[in-house]
Length: 254
Length: 254
Image: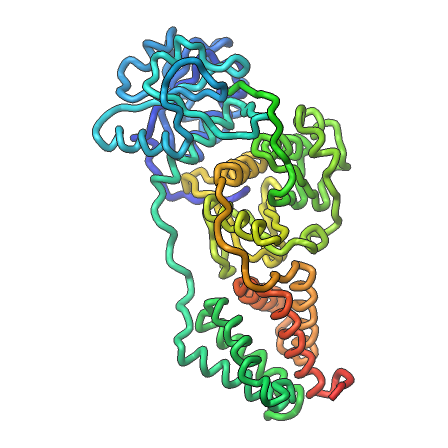
């Protein structure tokens, strides 16, 4: 999907994304892009397999390299989360560990609540194949699991970051803007209805007479559902007038 | 994130995923994987740039090749959605067209409601760089926009499919009750649009020629918003025919 504008959105203030022992530079870069898509700016890497920074990560992050540039490296998960107050661990597997498993929307709500209360928060993501080790999960207060097709639950690393980022941003997003065009007034609507119905009477369409009321109601109902703007009502009146001119029942102007 | 078990989840019954003029085989394969992750099985491709099937798509789909094998190819978007009753179009750009813009959760709820009521539904995704053309969007009843960082809103094709799939899978309970009347199929709608537009061309309404495309899109958008039933489409075609008979351009029957 295309489309970007240049209004700024702060990348500060969201949860820290912590990638634990990531294997492929490409996935680190793609995770940075996913963070940027949803306004998350702070990336931490625990013992990446390949030296970091690396070319693959930078190539894949195009447009989000500032996030890679600011990423911090840690030797252990424990060090990476030391300053955080609320840590959630992502996992797709059922675990023996007894921790509350949140879906991404619940997780995002808890992160927002914690951050609003002044806490620092983060989300742990495990290595591509193995997922997080139990020792990593033990550092987290709760688990996040992305509900998926049980026969094919394996999301790649950047996709998991994308979905958590999406849920984080969704709760943060301002409400939808108002419709662009002013709606038609009832008087404008009724003017159009009467214009249309008069033309249809002349065209012999609203017959037989006993059916006219229900036909008129059904037509009005479908146009009501469209929540027409004033401009659209004028367009529709133009349509009716064009047909009337074609029929020679109204003086033409073109 | 790792983790898969082998409980089955049906891939039938969800919305159709329609990729319009996709460019890269890799993205088609990744979209198939994202569909499989979230239990969506039916893929349609409109005029893919490269011959399909292709090696890149198959390699990227690993584990979801059954979805590619069953994918159907179409020459035009119109043919691809002809049998669908509720079509939503994804877009990241703000559009001049007046259609309701859903976030993915609203979109998923509407799709569930429509499908629970017996309708067939689908989601259109545009080509990687350009997004959907206005003519494609005119075939959809409403828009879906993924809220994202306005300074970096560009999601790739498979990521957009992933997020819509995630929202589809997330909702469990079927929402809204079925509509009272069976909805019109897209083919029925397009039949009405073309009938109306042909009549308006003969009436000299869709002028000057350079304005015709936007006039047609605006008219289609307002009728899409009305969520017409099959019966209402027949009524509106009757309205157009009545005007044409009045003008003596079509043999009358009464």
